[in-house]
Image (cartoon, rainbow, N blue to C red; front, side, top):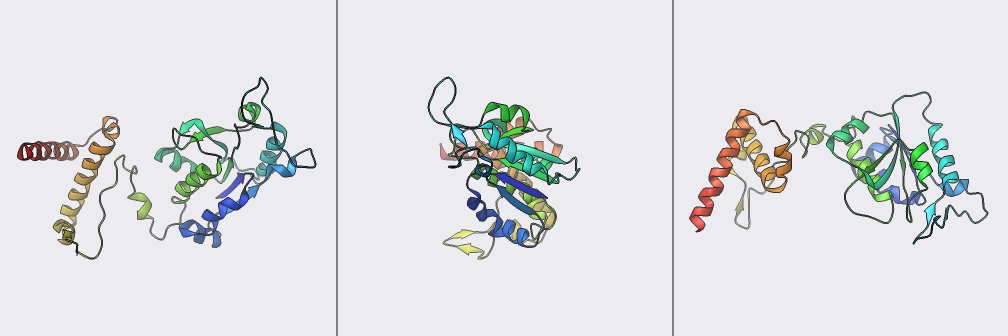
Length: 254
């Protein structure tokens, strides 16, 4: 996969191209990255690429000409491939979720437009961007951090980026549930012990325990995920157990 970022601050992306699993994979050329600064396409000596919004209002807006030129420059790398996407990181976009991450991981080329100031000229979004994506219902100073979050999530599904592909396959949301608790050595720390079932060696019981814990966490933290889910008979039974245990705990406390 070749990822290009259109950004005023290319240096920021070193945190994903030089560090951690994504950095190691980048060094091995498992994925490629390039940053394009739209200032190089500015039509003035000072490199301004923003101006006051028509109609008045606070802040500045990134202008269409340099952004169109930067996107066209990025598209030169497509080389006839049909699996390409130009994305603008925006709180007004569709929320990024696991399904979208998996979809983007199938692409050959990904161009990420990182806005600044009050945003970008609407004509860029209408005619040069394929879709807008949001990482949450909040606003940050620019699109670089959201872009890197999207990149990290997508790159986890690129073959050989992770040392163990099962790490990605067992993450939260992969099966529509939150992840189960994880433990490692020591078996006891400050009186807190690792659940006995995880040391039993019985993989059937371990798998059942993990499913139950995933259901319990999802019920507690993200019940909306369960509302959308077609529950299997085993999951229905485990949820009933969880509810009975919760009632028993409440009664013992009262």
